[in-house]
Length: 356
Ligand code: SF4
Image (cartoon, rainbow, N blue to C red; front, top):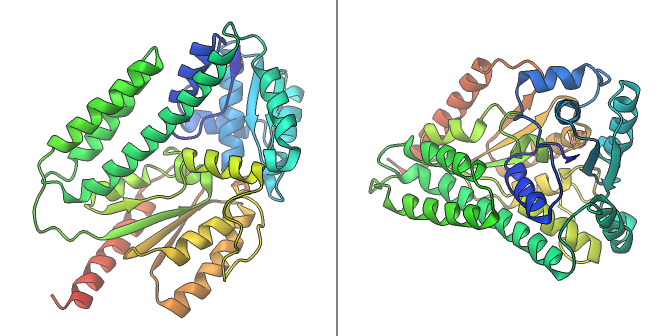
């Protein structure tokens, strides 16, 4: 059986795609403190948190019978460029031997090599011919629709009569997706959720605080790594936007592989220094929101540099940024207090600026 590490809702689409391709898959249990503990047991202490979560996922998947791993990587200057090799070595040494399929960035290894590795990973599929391409394209479209819908829910949440109604809708949507056996069912769940969203009662005259969530990609997308940050903000009545999603990552990776797309550097961070730190700084520069929450896991090298760049921006442009560093301690109270204080400050500032 093949497996893959978790990152946000990707597993929902990946599991359906593998099923339709006829590739037996083992989806690791959702990320919890136990996942992190299992990952820590084989990881060097100084590794960043995403590495430890992924190591935990792969150990748990091995115990479910997985003997082959598909792992996206970037060959970048930060640790992500070495995740695959290092993870493989550590897991092999700990007795979790599997066959590895490293999907490094096509921009680095070349499109041909990338497709060759993908083909090798899927060599046991029962589906052959053009249908394979059809299923893969449908999976990408599904991922895109899920990301778009979730972004819409997070935007509209702030205008609801009941601030928690969109959180309930989002949870129900993910549960409905996880119960699907085919992609057709998942597309239907997207349509049902869109209809339900339109029916939720709005409150007129609301002027919510708008927040951009940006930072390290794994911590931004994976709810367990950021302690449910976006749901907290939704419950506080904020409008939330997060530009970095998995469908963004897919587009970005394909464009980079083809040598097209966003290359212009930011004024504050002109070069790529690993991870997506340059994109973080660009998103902050272009933000029109009332405030920015910039997140990263402890030990993340590129995002520490982005933090320094953002401090200059804060001084020069007066933007308001809350820096949250998520570590392996799973207590939420400290984060909660800081987020509440930040949102409170933004609300007051918005009132003062608008003369109310
Ligand atoms: S961007 Fe940061 S968290 Fe992500 S792999 Fe690199 S060092 Fe680790």
